[in-house]
Length: 106
Image (cartoon, rainbow, N blue to C red; front, side, top):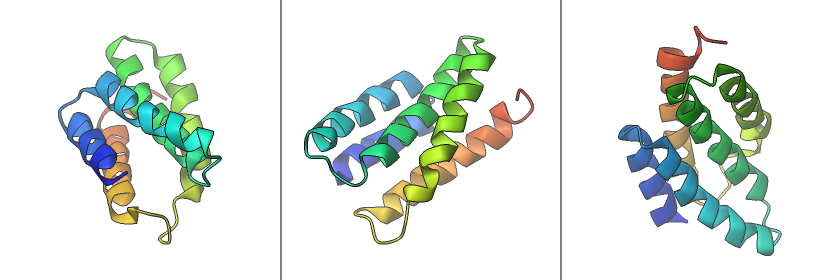
């Protein structure tokens, strides 16, 4: 999980949102098979990254829907989950992107 989150964060910082989606999706699929408790949180982060890819493609409605899904699952991020610090960092990046790029669009 640590490496996945580090790669996800790097992709977000480089505006490679499609890559971020794919990086996290691989981890999500593995955790989904195990019925792991953070599966939905991973899905939320996938949607958060994808929202910004849709903005790049001028699909504001789609971005808004995906961002809402991200926010729906965000409460699952508690400080007792594995790699909480990296999830926290990824959330901070996504929230900053929202403030800079998405807030005025939705």
